[in-house]
Image (cartoon, rainbow, N blue to C red; front, side, top):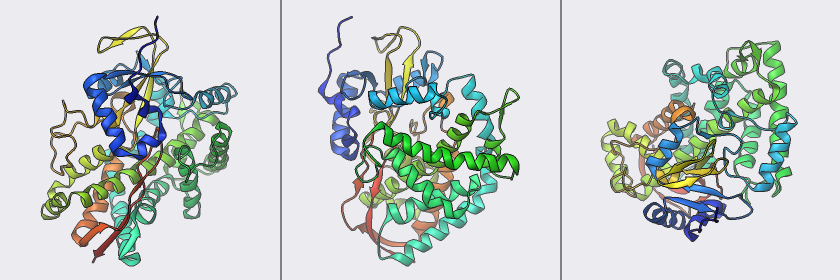
Length: 416
């Protein structure tokens, strides 16, 4: 088979710096949606893949989870990193979270933590979340009239929520935050521990060592928290493997707060940039549910997942061979002109809002309800107390190809 021709605009998807430049990124994605919606990308040091940029195609692939598999390439990483992870997996030492798994094993492992994120559990947790929202808006008032909203508020609020749910001691929260930054910020000079796959493995080893001790503790002395549910979870009557147990902790502890941080900070930035929408929401707080969905669509913290074709197939008439990978460009899907009216307008009342920021199908985000509740709680507390707000410097985005958003949002404000 001849090598497909590569559209130069598609290079942005294999360039971490592109995600730190919204204008460049969205110009390229708009071009791809219109002219090359299933685009071949061959941009070393990454292995080639097909970029899927249309909303309908992303959803169709997510639905076909028996044809498009998470294993062995669930997200974009360099070829060297892919190889190192494969070696680690073969040795029983690699990271294997829910995003790495396919059904039926995925469904069974997911069920271990599912009850902790169902509506009944969310209702029980809401009092605690609202208390923490007030604590952090009070903190915003106390450190004002200027702060870096990301580092002072947006990081810490969801971090405290998910760590409390897990049942981890407060003195360990900063360590979890640092490891999460190093894992998701591996392409960003400010956050990366180093530039090699071995540096990333060292981050994962630190995570695993911490959670191995936690697992032993919760198995010896179970408590009423999510950590105990994971430590004592069983699949077909057998305990989770050490690798699957530690991996479960890692995905909950990291994605469970970092993605919400990105939606919160991206949402506030959008409100500052669109003062009419901020005023509109302030005058009608019943719009909060739709405003939250729009913040999530707008920021799209998880930029992509990948799938590998189990058989020869086609997407939009383009042949995808067995073993080839597709890149689900959620950022592009959430700006698809065929799905969203005026997609580059931030609209707190947007309805319907069929964004794919939480994924779709069997891999729909386990913590979606918690993320929505946290965002709503913080802005429900903040907006009625806000007299004024503006940028106090230049916002900065994280360089990434996977999870990311604002890493700095300097603001000036008056708050009651």
